[in-house]
Length: 109
Length: 112
Image 1 (spheres, rainbow over the protein chains, first blue to last red):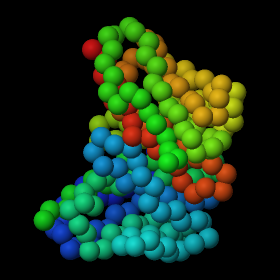
Image 2 (cartoon, one colour; image 1 turned 45 degrees about the vertical axis):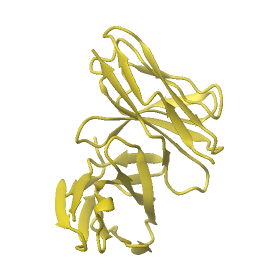
Image 3 (cartoon, rainbow over the protein chains, first blue to last red; image 1 turned 90 degrees about the horizontal axis):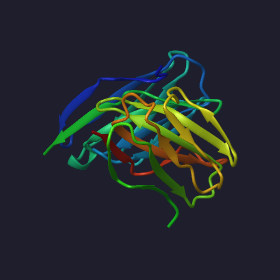
């Protein structure tokens, strides 16, 4: 079973626009992580947010975490064509990692 | 450069044959993991190992086997008992105090 569920499944935007995707989960977590996967490649770790944090930034990425709603969001600002990829959230519940099905993002020039 | 290497990138096998996928890391990470990814889906955990000579089944271990004789290496064998082995296989590792996993670039296995 999958702990994290991303929404939407797919997202198509133009360069310069912002992209927002959400992740909901079911059980208590230590931290939540976001990964990017380019087609046919491995996953690249983007950002980790701990359960006692509410917001975190890394470059053009902004992640929020609401533990009361068991949800997280990833915002990519000023998107670029190179941001085209699938984005996955992963929850860490005391060493047990679970990944969602991902959000496929397409950024068109 | 430290990293995690999976080989081969593409693998073709006939039905009924066992096949072993390689995963090597030089990050000095204690924990290593194998995931399976099917088209348009997330990752499902096959096996994981938190220390040498010890490993645990994940959510979909049936038809797979692993070994962890060295810290650096965590090979996965896809046996003939695995009913639907064609998939993209990802190996990952993680270390103490290190946030997140480091992933290999994956092996795409096709069984014909």
